[in-house]
Length: 112
Length: 114
Image 1 (cartoon, one colour):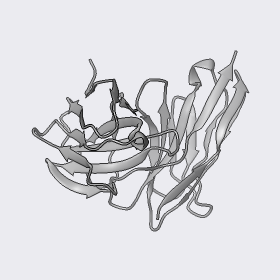
Image 2 (cartoon, rainbow over the protein chains, first blue to last red; image 1 turned 90 degrees about the horizontal axis):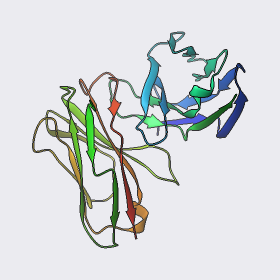
Image 3 (spheres, chains in turn brown, red; image 1 turned 45 degrees about the vertical axis):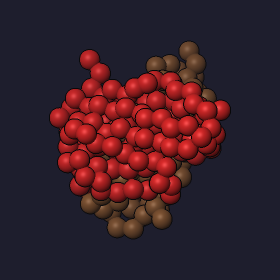
Image 4 (cartoon, each protein chain N blue to C red; image 1 turned 60 degrees about the vertical axis):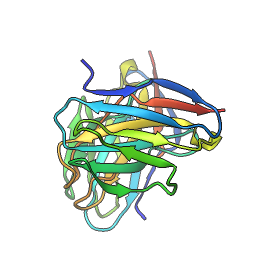
């Protein structure tokens, strides 16, 4: 079945550090790929998505590029802020489908 | 104003009992979903409904029954509760159910089964 593997556990950074959270997927065809962010006590909210090879998604300074060759969709941000502290989920939705398959989530902690 | 309302926010139940989790969305969407998030597993898709009809069911147990009385409602009835059912249950909705639409999530109901 479809699956998503992302950087496990916690990533601890200082403000203005560069962020990378790795995401690799396994699915047939051309799934749509997503990054979601979840703050404490809230549901996940969409950061952005991408549907085609080499397509870049971006929002709030975060970005990721769909790479079908390496089956990856790594999340990056050049300079993180304390307010970016949250859990980040990589997810996929199969061709012409709506079901989201999530990775296990990565807790980002940014200290001033 | 919250666009997706889930009630209650917290719920404590005893093993063997039955509970209903409420979800209402005010986004005008025609597709709704349930997901579960537990300490042991990542966010898991449970059900999807489109125009009040069940489209997909990924739960292994018939103890979980979605109920759609109105287009913008999708409640989740859970019977014969077990401690393993303890999790946060998220309702979500989207404009349409095909083509990987953006899904909007509610704040969740945290269920604890003792």
